[in-house]
Length: 329
Image (cartoon, rainbow, N blue to C red; front, top):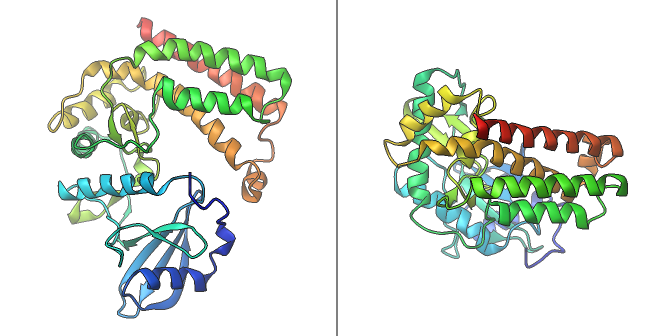
């Protein structure tokens, strides 16, 4: 966890944002501090007096250690070194890429990159192109290990998230037993389906909303905030428009492009629905950690109610059946 848990985003006034960046760089900034969309972190567009624009990303206190954040940066730099289009963080005065405000909030500074969200049409050529991009990124991901990032596995994040939900006061007594029962059944089904799968550094949240189209310069991967160690299939299934059973054609088009750069067994299509189940539990735990945040309560007033947990448990049971049905097909 962050070494300074008392740090708070309320400390991030425009003056303190500018002071933090200027003290870690040789930049002289104008007064521009334009907030950019980000629920977890705080992200601002800044402008230097010479007209150059930057993006300062202030990481949510308590979420990542400095070592974990540096592993995110290292992965991005490995991608950049292999000519994979990413925006790498700037080197600061410390000869590092991670700075810290006086209040203890970690931040990084990136060049402002133009581009628009990729308008994905879902034709065969685009699936193939996506597979190529993903295969290149995973080739970079396999170069090193990340020992401070989450391990997306049944014994890693899935058990951690399931236990956290049960141990904290997020779920009422009438639904605790049902939730524990379905998550343990899922664990028993999922574990053998992911056994012996090689793990590597992965993006962790690889969907089309995290791909920019820079026209002649090609596609750029953004937002490595959920970077983790896990199976390659985790970075595949979020791209698909439906279930594994519904998206066999799209999967194999992705795989064809992917295998230009890195081998991946076709059998990993069977990992898609198990990974989706893990994501469902991960998201419940993630929401639980945000439930006292004012914006979260405003946007999700029903979160944690009996009706909410009834729906979630039903969805997990349906997902269990999806896994079993695909495994039999």
